[in-house]
Structures are given as C-alpha cells and as structure tokens.
Amino acid sequence: MIWLQSGGCGGCTLSLLNAEQPNVLLALEDMDIDIVWHPTLSEASLDEVSACLEQLLTGEAPVDILCLEGSVMTGAAGSYHRLPNGQSMASMITQLANLADYVVAVGTCAAYGGITASGDNLTGAVGLMFEGSQLGGALGGAFVSKSGLPVINISGCPTHPDWVLDTFALIAANKLTHQDLDPLGRPRFYADRLVHHGCDKNEFYEFKASAEAPGQMGCLMEFVGCKGTQAHADCNIRPWNGNGSCLTGGYPCINCTSPDFADPGHAFFETPKVAGFPVGLPTDMPKAWFVALSTLSKSATPNRVKANATKDRITVAPSLPESKKK
Image (tube, rainbow, N blue to C red; front, side):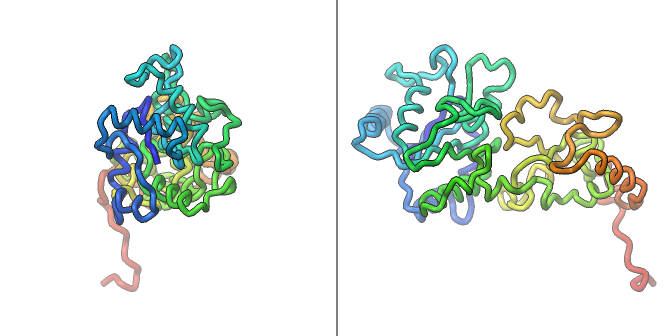
C-alpha cells in the first residue's frame, strides 16, 4: 500500500494514528498489508522515495492499494503541488491510479474536494472521482481500478480510524464489492447509518427541547446547525477515541461525510429556517409530518427535559416512580 498526500491538512493521518485495539501498525500487519511508503509513517529519504515511485510506475513493483489523503490540485496545470523532479502531483496520482488494484480516497478532500475545494477554489482542488457531489474529479466519473471497483471514498473530516482499517481489512480479504459501496462510493458499513442513530441527545430531539448554544445538553438541530439527522455515518455508535463524538462533546454535526459540507451556505453554528422550521429536515421525513410532530412534541415536553436543554449539565434529575417515593 502506498499513501500519498496532496491538497489537505494531514488530519486523516493524525486520526488514523489514534486507532486502538490494535494500533494501526499492528492492524496492517495482521491484514498482511505492507506500507511501501507513507509520508508520516515511513523513514525513507527523498532518493529512496523517488526510486520507489519509479519502480511502481515502471511496473517493477505492484500497486495493490493506492491511498490519497487530500484533494487533487488541478489548477494551473498542477503547479500548486509539484514533486521535486517537477512533475505535478496530480499527474503522479493519475498514473498510479491507473496501475492500482484498489484506489482509496481517505477523507472528504480526496473523495469530493472537501475543505480544500470550498469557496472560490482557485487551486482547482477536486476529489479523485467526484467534484463535490458530481461525478468527474481528477480520474473521471467512469474510472475503475484494476479490481473493477471505482474509487473507494472513505469520506469524513477527518475519517474515523476504524472506517479506514475496516475498509483495508475488506480489501485484504478480497471481500469488498460494488454492493458494499453507496452511490457516493462510501463503504456502506458506516455510511448506511445516520449520525442521529445512537445520539445521546435523542430524548431532547424527541421533545424538540433545543439547545441555544454549543455545549448545552439539548438537541442542537433547531438553533445550532446540527445535521445529524441527515449525515451518513455511525459516529454515535462507533465512539471516537473510544469515548465520544462531536455531539457528545456538545458540538453540532456538520455532515462532514457529505460531498458539499464545506459550503453549506450558512454558518456551521446556525440553522437555516423557513417559517420557524429548519430547512434541513431529517432524511426521509415528509415536511408536513415533521411540522405536526414537532408541534405536538413541544407541547408534551417534560419540565425536566425543557430545563436541562439549555444547561451544560443535568440540573433536574428524572423523578422516581411513585412506589419508590417515601
């Protein structure tokens, strides 16, 4: 496996290094995956890396798995990211992708352009096979690697270490198929979940008892921009660092696994509304039903839930059953 970095921050690598039970090196060893080169994990000198790349490009060594972290910088004919020999990184990525059995985009930047492609995108940053939510990108929308699969998009900003390692495990076992990827190329084992699933704020969501600022206990959807009911990921079922998620930390979900999350059209901590109701409704829920249920839920909100929603910790505890009172 060879891992390249281009237009990004390196955060997906930092996240991967937090893999636990086992750590990333032991996990890869168990999968019988050798790292040919990784910019953070390898000790190879520039000359050694150059020689390694030459062997891969000439076919002297196979490219079983090509990973890219960060977007492909296509602006100014690739001039924004060049290798020491003058070749553009975009060109190197394309050549290696055409030789690889599997091509893996690690992170939303590599998958769809991500943060690097947000705003005016003067660097021409794109994903490997997508430009935002549109097929295309650096390799083109019809790309398939030698295994017959399209680019495997492990989106996320950053990616959960388990999402990366579990994908590698499926590849190493030759168990990853087209059916295991959703229409945006994301592995279904995590993308067929919503961040809303398993959220510890679900009691507040049920009664529409809302937080008014980050860090408060209530549901963050109505006022603080949370998109957990629309975001495809298992963040609240598969804890980060063995402990929590953005939502358990009081931070709204910004839907970082989706192609266009970096340009939401509003501040991340704001919820756009029409007639007092959020524009971004839960996935698959008709608007009329949401409005009706939301109104009914608010009228039935227990005082305990309402009081705790705007606090940073529990201030009103659940009452005891009548039989337990003395």
